Image (cartoon, rainbow over all chains, first blue to last red; front, top):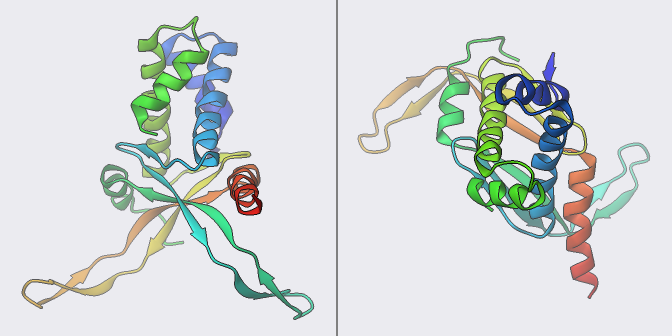
Length: 99
Length: 100
């Protein structure tokens, strides 16, 4: 199972007493505001969790894996996530399957 | 944008909610996400992206000060894969700027 927006809204309803609609809107807005900041070109720093950084990639040679045809991969901006110390430490302790 | 700026941006649009409630909600969501990853659960947010764990096998490391060899055990690290909407919005804004 994976954590989804529905479960996050459920938690806000259970723990903070937001009504169902408010809880759903809150989760929606949380992710939307992070997307909007990144779209504007701002880094997003969530202490204790991690940073969403932007990186600009130059054009580089690529290939269509099906046809083998050479096509350049155009210059682009991408989002990367750097987990914070606290999150890294919590996850490192996880002793689950080595996948 | 920092966590407190994110809380402020949300507060501006959710005027009917107390600032304190928004602060608690943001902290609650981040804690739930951290907790999920700490217990090996994935996070899947459509249009935003997914978080999962990647395994790093054990390796021989070195103490950079003494040069001494140390055995490092295997560990998990968080990994984020941006979703389609996030990728397109971030790159779309960038391409528009390139064309100007």
